Image 1 (cartoon, one colour):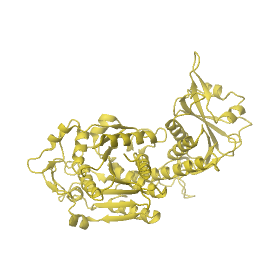
Image 2: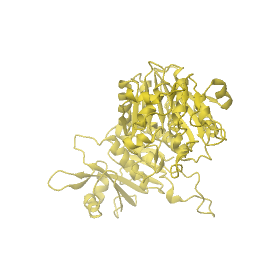
Image 3: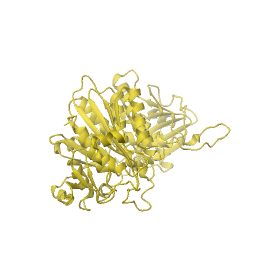
Image 4: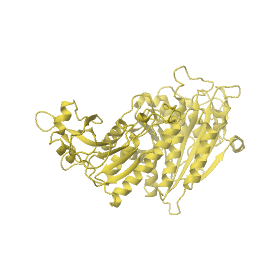
Length: 515
């Protein structure tokens, strides 16, 4: 993880390997031109006031996230490299740049500085919110998953330095003695570290992370941060009647687990239960996935990773709330002991489910965990899952869907997601789709109408939520794993989607404002 410091030094005089400044489009007048953003004044002065003109010569447009590197002037800037990152249209004098714009710009710059030791970020930091955005974006952008990378320098035994994340981030203009600035930076560091924890888990291949090893990770974190933890193995699951989790995990040589990890505070204002889908590998089971759809299925535990990381973050931030995470962990594999299409499972709630498709397994493990979480009577429940391809078709690869049994709570979750910069969209739960899950042999089937499949999955989960408990379902199938090029602070591979939303929800619980 990159080190983070706050610096009141000038961007031009700070000793670093690079200095990052913002540049924006100036649309005033007939022809748009570039202008340096606040924070870049000292660097612009070193260029004789011609920083924008120099960047225009190099083809820079000031578009959001655009990165342009140029040598520092012969004198006036101690860093040898200047990195200009686009902020889009210039903010007016009486306006501040949007937090997500700063977050993404800082992330893009940090990614572009992989292999660099220290960079000074001289982006607009007019207040603590801006400090938080720049710090979080830079830290999130400075990420690489290298656990399985081979050594490229046998003599020195080191890994390829050019791919190493930026080592140190200095925020210019942020004041270390300002309590609000320091608190913002400290929170950003915790949140970024926990997003990285989720990313690492998601990127770990299935032969390195099965239900048992995932549970061990939870136990280790619980010991380190003072969390309570309980792990139900296959024997305890059988004794407790967790038919959904056992049914999904029955075909694998790696038995399933249900993990409860909790943070409690003596002055807690509200309680929040988080439930995560943790399919450490999803082959589809007997309903085997077609060729070309298996290669990234190590990411099907992204929901559990997000829940785990959010609970740890709540503990590290010392939130005055009771936050409990339920990790429903299983590996969905085909074998002689696997659940077959047409089988009927008896869930932890006592309801029976006819399994029409074993690749609709996430809702089965979540159903057991939702019922168990509800027994503790939390003020609200939120589940997170890479649940349906239908949600990707509806919202694309960067936006997760939000469903809920309470319109006000759904709105609150959407508001929080927007606040932290995670793209999300509220989705309906049409009652007429429930009929498609009627079964002639069981209480409900795990499949319904094909069209609106993401909504059908939400309606299935709703059946296992206690009456009267506000509940939201986040389907992160699109943004959880980025198979395209990295952008902003989002890397290729596991993204840690929903972690920041869950942490902010936990903070609202600490403020007594979940609803």
